[in-house]
Amino acid sequence: MRDVILPTLNEREALPWVLGRMPAGYEPIVVDNGSTDGSGALAARLGARVVHEPQPGFGSACFAGLLAARADVVCFMDCDASLDPQDLPRVADAPGDLVLGARRGSQDLHARLANRVLAFELRRRTGVRLTDLGPMRAARREPLLALGIRDRRFGWPLEMVLRAAAADWTIMEVEVPYRPREGRSKVTGTVRGTARAVRDMAAVLR
Image 1: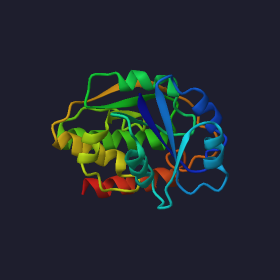
Image 2 (image 1 turned 45 degrees about the vertical axis):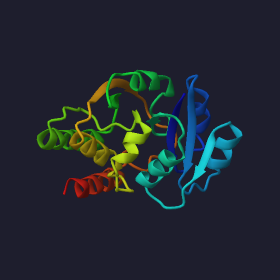
Image 3 (image 1 turned 120 degrees about the horizontal axis):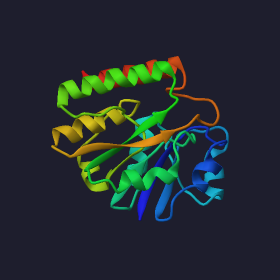
Image 4 (image 1 turned 45 degrees about the horizontal axis):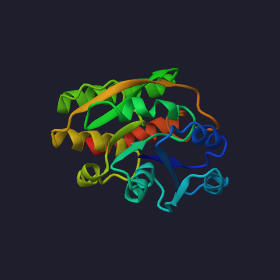
């Protein structure tokens, strides 16, 4: 059994598709991070385990899900239907300590450029060769907690990789398809959201 942590903020439109495509043996944990559209209640009706995290921030939601998880291996992925849960086994079964799903598809130009810059800076500082700091990823729960990730905003994904590299983890990526999300984007689907994510990640790099 693997736990799948799904940080969620107003994803009512995407939830039925995402939860309906969860592979056998993968337990969804929907972390409701202050939704006002009934996402948490809908997720519960659809059979997901729901955790409510009142502190805003992507990292806050991820950390709350990690604390609530019970499986030895945990996965993370966005809950906006841009990634297909059916691809989770490709990530979770890959032979690395930390495995990221490298998105291949029609990302917005500003998000693609920002991601490229961050991936280059990560390679320069750590030697870890990644092409995408993608939100679909998998690792073992206890070692992940032991990394002591501190960021509670959009720097969480980058800090995870930086700390894993410092701990000499084997870090790798596998390609996963990327599709247009359902509903309105709150992060990298907008220029403002991308700028906010880059700001938080730059703070982590500092």
